[in-house]
Length: 491
Image 1 (cartoon, one colour):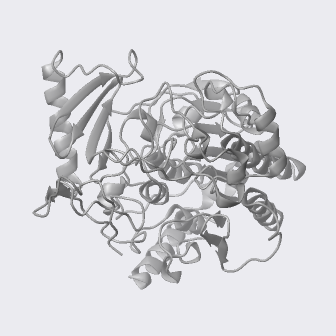
Image 2: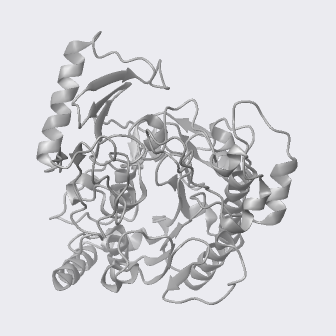
């Protein structure tokens, strides 16, 4: 499989060179691209999205310099599928990436959920790294990968000239190993890796992807930041977890260092800078329906003395209000995420954009801006956002999700069209319909009031599922009501 992938990369390079006169003439018009990915950061976690406790001054400044999207979505409510969608431009279900890698399931539940088709990003996919590499970009990837641990599936074999990916969370081992700044917290280390990459590649177009572990549990952060938020005045109806807030700010500081380096090298104005999250916010990790007494601390063991053992903040990090639910669900709290894009040379400052966009859209957008062609034999589900960046017309008919596994909810699928969103329970086949313009919290099911619209959206969802060969749950012969909520592993 690798040999065919290399051949495709050569063909892409040849196409770029053969038709490269215009591209080479406009080489300075092609932006550097910096992509920053947060882990489990919710739509409502940042100040520019209405949070009055957490602080992120660098991201706030980034939004003031560019576009803040209010209807941006992850292609899945968990990590690996969304990351696969960014690298491929495809819906995760088309790839067969149904859950995070390696995934988990409930062996005694009502249905048996499908496994991931592969526990890595399939080798035949031309990644965004490979596409940009073939277009003459220097490419770098640093941080969490979560798309396969085998060296064959490492970013270095997926189109990235330089890459260090980490395994684990706060005792991270990098592959390839990287010793410098081992004493520093991970957000600072990733900033240093990014700055080093920029320094080495500042004289050519580059694509830098930095993937943070913040704000995934177990929570850990700099002591001075934790103290700051412990002493900060609390607000009503929000947990105000000091560790969670500290993780947001330490990631923000890391981002600020990258921006500062770009400005110092006088290349910031021609850099497309993207900040995104891989799924919605995770409010807690003790969602065991029916087993309420079980709790799972979300604070790293080294920092659990920050709160008393019986304090709820040992278990709750954030809330996604006004959005419903959280990571691992197809309600808005699980899939709607923050997206900020800045490109001072080209796009209008301090813009709020309400168009519906998704993680599958980055691939065709970057291809457009790099002035290169998308792979001929690779289906791209995303739509280029180039026209949106230039404040021109942009349209999307539908956006789809298929998440056929148990996590913080039951296996489900969803479709969004304009202000309408339909969610289908893949176990009971129950359907609910919401108008997100008037009901962002998804509190009122309108399926009985709008039966024709419900039927049309249901058919569209079904047609799409058939088209991408989506995998579905199957009846479980070992269904056990008493054990149904117990988690298992296929490893």
